[in-house]
Figure 1: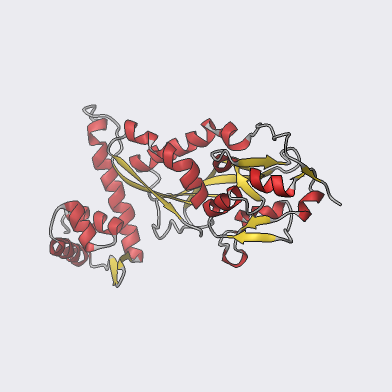
Figure 2 (figure 1 turned 90 degrees about the vertical axis):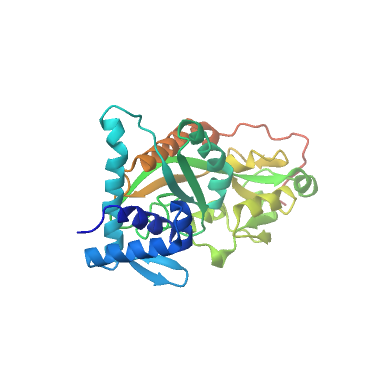
Length: 311
């Protein structure tokens, strides 16, 4: 019969992937963590981790054990609440993965709102260019522009955001303000690096046109926005980021409207955890609360800028 207390060591190593990190969190020596994991594997007669150079990776049986251990952890944590002697606070770490732009420009500051309500909750925001594998526990929650496909994933659309064409005051003073979609073909653009795009929907400029003249490309949306603000050309940028820079001027607001849906995905093995539920509820409420900020733009286009007409 295995020792219930070994589950604490198992959970921490599964989340940290390294003995030293798990030991530090548990305030024990790393040899203690190693010994307790070995004892747990011996008692259960299963291999829970593969030992690799870059850390400890859960085996298939380890993933099954993780789901069981987290359910036990959840039930234990609910005891005070079920007995009426405590509140329904959420504690622990929740890792949220998403793309760089929406993570840095929209989610980061708003996730901090949870700190006041749930001081025991730590949200880790991870930004990636590729689709996250929740089955392999690369993150707890994934927020993306496309719905991931996988077994036992819970996927739901939580909102949308609009993108618009922008350029700097300096660029428009030199090149003129385009007055139609056709006029865009004579302008210079900022875009993604084509062969390094991991998720095709982020090549949103193709919804408007395929530019013939590109002065700058980057895998980073933030880098693109900075380049547009510096006068490199016209870029298609999300409202939630572009409106933060006063040097950016919107172009053809009525003619060019591009939208992307936002999906939240969580694995069903951890969807029930209190800390995960709290973050899911908060993120979902953010997209509902800020829908207008994400999708509507009514700033006036400067009338003093010259208009570049298609010759």
